[in-house]
Image (cartoon, rainbow, N blue to C red; front, side):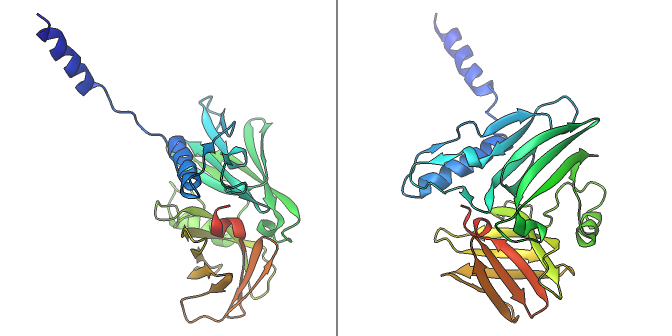
Amino acid sequence: MRLPFLVFFCLTLVLKPAFAETETDRILTEAAAACTDFENGTFAAGDAVTSVDLTGDDQPDTVIDSAKFTCSSAATMYCGTGGCSLYAVVGDQRYEWQALGWKLVDWAPDRILLIGRDGGWCGGAGFERCFEALNWSEGRFLTAMPPFEEAQADAQGEDSTNLTWPYSTPEYDATGLLACSLDAPTHELTCAAGAKRAETGSATIHMMSPDGVERVLEFADGKVRSPDEVQTDWSKDGDAWYVGLDGREFYVVPDAFVTGG
């Protein structure tokens, strides 16, 4: 007499939809895994996740501030003086910046995501502070961009949603915009970059030069080298690497972008 109930119960288990992992879940999972991998630490997200309408469509989006993350085995797992990873999740799209804090500003009819930045991102020194303002328009974030980045965005077509193209793929552990310049170390431009990190603290950084040529830098053992036949000059000031290639291209790479913390 119990068989029909058992059959129904089993069918219910089979037909129940599987839990769909969101992009927010993935970010938290990645952060927890990084903590566990470092001396089996214990991760806590704290109040890092904030539900907020970033696009003005009255639908909840998500901001995740890794400055609120904690890891029992590493006090600076997610942050350095250059900032912490700040994520925005709109739909199934993830955006990431190195930030020294954030605030949402209503400027009717727009909503402005204001991000505190290390001065190196804005052509200044690492100890300085500057701010980047972003607003959502036509399915993407807009911010002030130099001509090269506008050209890169145009190359992706009208559906472009990510300023760190072509590095916004799962192949990279982090993406960002590095301060860069041509001919003189003014660092007044920004260049898209992606980081592939190793457990040893080393990393390979792929980046697009201001004139559209991909460059690769390898950070290991406290040194920087280019695997290409490019003269590489570098120095480190605080938490930022200052790199020159062939005496013509100049980049500022935050240490947090290399190590992830």
